[in-house]
Length: 531
Image (cartoon, rainbow, N blue to C red; front, side, top):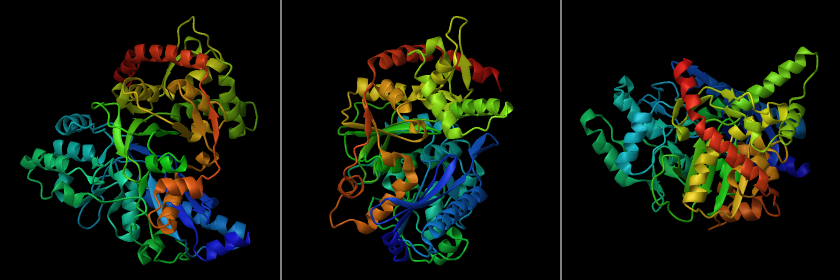
């Protein structure tokens, strides 16, 4: 206790704040990188004018609330008023689109990763660059706005992502970590910067639009893990801590995306490692030791925080529909006057799924709350479908909702593992799907037909991951790589729990995925018919 109090008062700590899809979390770590305090704020995106967004007020209110709760946690546990930290880092859900004018005004509402409104731009840029440009990437949003002839285009002075925006307002620095930057525009892994030839192709592509800017001039500067990314200004300190206790001058690390903080908090930034993050969305990051043989629309190429190439399979939908069904069971129980503990409810239902048939007894479900690019859907309609002969019971019902949460991920990962024969030494799982021990982990192992490891620290999430990146910036030894820092100073002695795939589960998932593929026209009919 005394050591922690001393670390807090002397600023030998690091603070990470991550903006997830449903929660903003602040985590303070001590000298050993272990969490010592935290605070969280729940928030939800909203669909306005057919755009998934959060308002600027949502952003600042959520940031301040999560920080205030973390500082209150420090006060309650250690009797100390938080006035400084050693370093700060910001992370957020990846990519999206935030354009600003010269006065720093946001020109259109924040367009999040969840929007599937840039198909035309995505396809054209992929063709021009011979490099897959996903719909959620910032450059796809920018080019789509140009194609749509939106008024704001001529006024753009700067574009960034959510964590880049927060970092800029708190430090004055227009920067991004290389991992998140790789989801704004393709990165040249040799130079660890934006791909110059593709920038030239983009500028030539929009020549006829007579824009008053060149692409390079409106993108954030790219930084690597360990680089210094500015300091907290007086104005920034007041914006972050409404109590006024926090002092200016604190160094900040490069802001990174949740994909990259997921790599950090599962120790999977080295080549031939993979992490799977399963929450509102689900994605797998495979750190490549060789280039892929061709361009795949299902596979995104991004970077680790150190600039190594990563093949990402990103799916917009994972646990949202599953959570909605669990809430139905909660409402059912409460109708009988039963007080429901949500952790127990999730655990009970998830474990019930283990009693189900390996192929879900003929049930079929689609968890599409929003569009899903891997299966070519611009909108989603959550569905549960069965035949009169299907074995419709609770175990199969929960199992089908767990398996469908990972089905689009499996479709993308099968390309990497079966077609490209990508080499993997480790697969790590983290996120809400893995909280119930052995259930989500076993289903993922079946989906990928590979062992999956879940580490104790995986539950800490991306806020802890960005805190570790902030800590690395101020505590690394000369020449110490991020890989070495994680292995020796963060994860030393931690092995996690590994589950091998059950061969019968693997067979069952393969049967289910065939049913899933054949049923996709049902999802199309639902999208077309239910407006």
